[in-house]
Image (cartoon, rainbow, N blue to C red; front, side):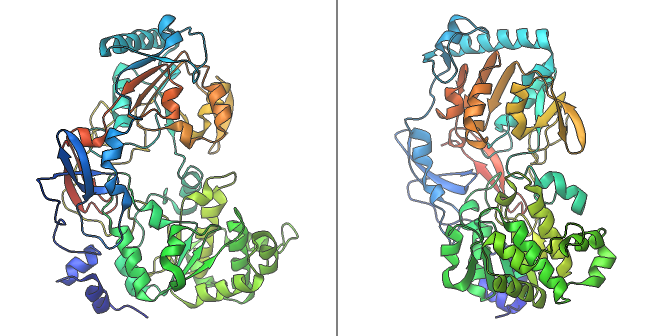
Amino acid sequence: MRLTRRDFIKTAGAATGTLAITSAIPMPAWAEGPAGGAILTAGRWGAMYVEVKDGKIVSSKGALPKTVPNSLQQTAPDQVHTTARIKYPMVRKSYLENPGKADGKRGNDPFVRVSWDQALKLIHEQHSRIRSSYGPSSIFAGSYGWRSSGVLHKAQTLLQRYMSMAGGYAGHTGDYSTGAAQVILPYVLGSVEVYEQPTTWPMILEHSQVVVLWGMNPLNTLKIAWSSTDEQGLEYFHLLKKSGKSVIAIDPMRSETIDFFGDSATWIAPNMGTDVAMMLGIAHTLVKKGLHDKAFLDKYTTGYPQFEEYLLGKTDKTEKTAEWAAGISGVPAEQIEKLADIFAGNKTMLMAGWGIQRQQYGEQRHWMLVTLAAMLGQIGTEGGGFGFTYHYSNGGNPTRVGGVLPAISAQIAGGSSAGNDWAVSDAVTSIPVARIVEALENPGGKYQHNGKEQTFPDIKMIWWAGGGNFTHHQDTNRLIKAWQKPELVVISESYWTAAAKHADIVLPITTSFERNDLTMTGDYSNQHLVPMKQA
């Protein structure tokens, strides 16, 4: 079925065309809240009503109407009242006995409760000593990781603002989520792209004929957003399922998304990590059958002739046929050839996730997907091309141009981070986030990154706030060993995470339910402004 604009408006249940094009579910602003005067607030999993009795959170539910439920919106009581909460400032026993030269090993020592005055005095004295002895580059406050919603209480940003006022710090570049893709794509597309707003969903629902979900699980990852989810991404996937359009899901695992679409989608499960080979097999079939758009390639791209020589095996004596791709990916050659026919014969939207590039040579995945989209010649057309943010933060929900809350900045000379927390400011030096272990192992060592030779700082102090690197980082045993080298490790945390257990000093911090703030929903849409009232 091909949805017309009129059909789409009917499906969305809108009173006017304008509402239909700006929201999947343009219902009354808020769903009916629970009885008893619940508190309106928000988290990264959306706007919520939180019910409090006798000073304790007893229930929470989503505040926006929805078709697809979000189980995370019911977890506020557990988040606040779990026994894993850090309740007091704590110092590792041997560090307290001999600050800066502690015996024992991080991760093994017991912790001792201290007062806030003791903890802050200890941090200040050791911070001052390390800064004056080794300089600002010795203090790592890159503090990459998750954070709570809100334009003020952004742990990473506040830490870096403080460190900027103190004279600078060693920061980070990039992130774990898109580290390889965001380095390669500026050379391919002229922008970082993996964080850009893609073709909007109303265009897809009206014009796309085939939607490909390549290495993405939106039914899981759209439960949250970087600031707070506007909840429209899941609703749009619900409308996609109802539309009758051809949906092809390419994923080695049977994910929640595969189950959600069921018989209304075709599931293809290649071998893990063989996406590029499969794409090359499709590309080769396009050339063999003359289905690639030569006019588009000539007008809008550079470098295609060199790529085609590689594709046809003229440079390495290996032709990237569908049979060759089948031998690597495990997907039958006939199916790979059929995909080429389907992609070229229809208005096709290639949606891809970030997970496929979180590996060695990961930059090739997104680079090749853009190449394949260029060969189809549909980039920039209504409902065709590619997009990398449909699976996170509700990419594709149209952007509003009304009032947008500015956020507190890591910069001390004014300015706003505008929500781009991955663009770190006021660091005297920065390392790629995933090379923190190498920096600790090899201080002053040289390394290559993005075409340049750089030098690792000699890190003597780490302060991490708003994220858990022990769950992000690869090779945890190597991380634990390198983590013993700094003279001071401070962790600001709500819970006894692995990172907190490997600190010298642990400072307890509030959850977003325990303070006042404001947030926008929709990192791309700016759909709502939500008061985050202290519960």
